[in-house]
Amino acid sequence: MLTARRPKAEECLRITGAGVRPFVEPGALRHRLNDGTALVLRWSTVRGCYGGQGTALCLGCPVCSHTVRVLRQPPGESWSCRHCRPVSYPSHRRSGAQRGIQKPISWRIAQVSDEQQRIAEMLGLGHWPPERVLWGLPDLQTASRMPDAPRLSVERRNALERRLNALEDIRICTFAPLVLRKGKALGVITEVATAAERYLSTAKEELATTRWAMRRQASDTRTLRRPDQISQLSICSAMQRLPKDSPFNI
Image 1 (cartoon, rainbow, N blue to C red):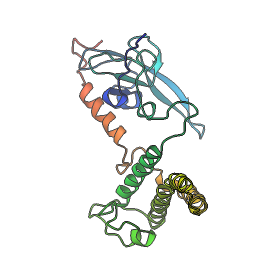
Image 2 (cartoon, one colour):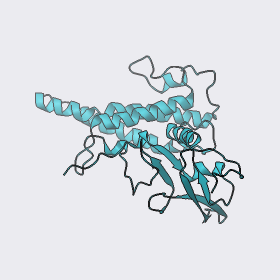
Image 3 (cartoon, rainbow, N blue to C red):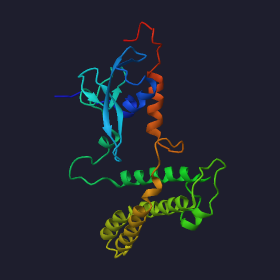
Image 4 (cartoon, rainbow, N blue to C red):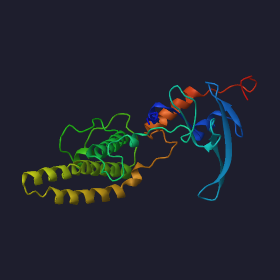
């Protein structure tokens, strides 16, 4: 029996409790969207890691009334949670997503390239990727910066440059299994696998020591997260602050 295809998550409008909070009054129980959907707001008390207390805003699903943090609206459909209307995420659509099948090399290379692009934006590099085919850490240290490059401390900049260099080593090492299989098929003895394992272990240690450089607060304007920007645009386009005396408020 054929089943309906799930809508893609990136094609759906997305609303979160944290995104709705700036548009409503503290303690409000309902809010109406531009399309006429009445959102049920549910406030709860949460305890922080330092013992303090605060309030968190969750949403009630218009379909099943369950308390959720995220609501999505597929094209041509109504707002619902992921239990009422499952969606398809990019990780679900990659090849080899089934259990027991190894991820393809292209998937790992795409992940590494995305993080490299983000680090290059954080460093404000004037040209990325570098013009040279083979480049190293000295090339990053002497690379030109854009005029509006983010202001970073010396420690963070050095850590990001080392992380970018380590990611390039990992990207190159991902081709080692393919080269090894081709070498064995041709009967050629090669030391590519041994060298790749050595460089890969060193690069992983470098990633572990520079992980702190990627952390940023959510309020930082230099945080480069495209999904968050898309979420804010979706909220602004889907919601409208209505006056208290409006007959459409409930």
